[in-house]
Image 1 (cartoon, rainbow, N blue to C red):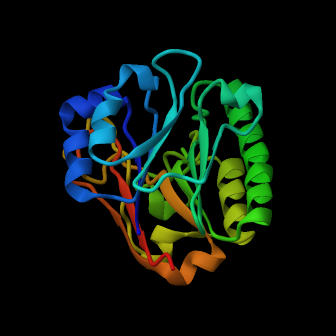
Image 2 (image 1 turned 30 degrees about the horizontal axis):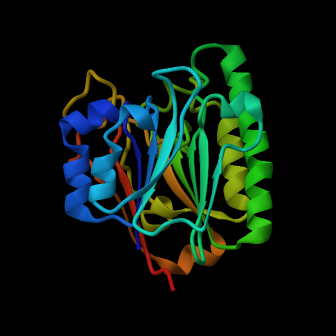
Image 3 (image 1 turned 60 degrees about the vertical axis):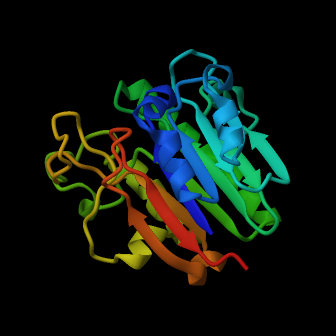
Length: 255
């Protein structure tokens, strides 16, 4: 089973650059997109239908902002849009899709860089998101949480870590949240397969060739412990340029 997570930084722009052709060529099983910045009515969904994808959308109330979408070859048996908490759901940040023996949570965690108010909002989101996912785990032990977390886990995940010690995305409180999540039963699938490797998923516009300068690893596929032995491969597809992020591919045995 092949699962992709990808912050597309505007799905209409990514489609113009060739996103749908790429998806058609590779036949991924589940695709989690973040920062779609669009409602389904403004996207050529008939093309998605034609290449065999069911699609679920959770868009922000505000146009051109945030939003997540999940595409899948198999129709989910259950879908939830949002966490049932209006202050987050108006921003279109979470989709839950349940398949036969697996739950995939597609998330776009808030960026706290705009102000201390938004940083506090991010911390509130993280706390409520934790509780919501824990409820899912009481129903289903096989869970994948994929998306743009807007958090670099450790100094391995941001080359200029000393200069960014106080920057949003690398502040101690949010990093502590991520570490606690992992301690409580999730596995960072990329780090599981690459314990000491440096590889990144986002680059600033001033670094179009995607060197390490200014790069961050903030896109993850976190899996619950029962799935850890099923990992076959995790890779960052850095040659895909439809966004300022790159896709993260997780391949698992799903028996």
